Image (tube, rainbow, N blue to C red; front, side):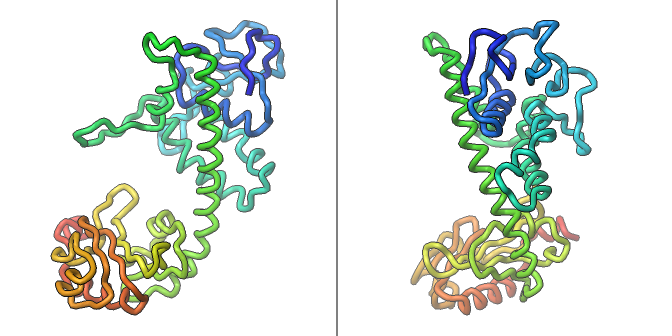
Length: 309
């Protein structure tokens, strides 16, 4: 991507001034799609422009979102420029990448990545109860704006931001493709569920599928081979938004490991239980099944009962 100083040289135009995640990601996307694009940043759009010039996040046209009649998703989240650009060019981008399951990846990428950027850029901020500053992706990209009295060059900073955004788009795309590919495997595994447990032959991204399938509503635990050796056992939240666990490991296991945990639980091969009890680890698959049976003998967490009754 090259920032040009003359508008006549540019094929892509966006606004100047303070940088935001929206136009940064839009620029990064176009550079990934077409390669070596020439971009002009300006505070206003001339009345007459070459019809082949693509304008975004400014100008109140197709790829802007500041006008009153700007496009809105079915769920009420207004598109920002990146969302509008993905909606128009996303399938072309995926086709050029020889992506399979284009429609699934197209939809998932928008929902998993772009929608939150759109919402944040349009001023939709979730209320987060935390005694510390929670930085959104948009907050991270604001860091690329020149700092007060830093003497940083705004054009260099914009190029740095676009380069970083390109990396994130590439990584997110790989992640989404993996999740879409894994969905079929998770659905097959659900057909073989037992004792409120999903058993996976290898670790894979299962959460999205598990929490969106009615057939998985009675799944409380997921077992998978751990990349550290042995097996991991994770609890399952009620929904994607509510992280209350559907079932818990026994309270007395919390934070223990190895011999101490074996003695407290009476289960040989139970090697670890996280302090918040969302994860346990063990030596073998058979031990994992024993752990789950033991956990299911304990009472369901009161907070879960209150939400499911």
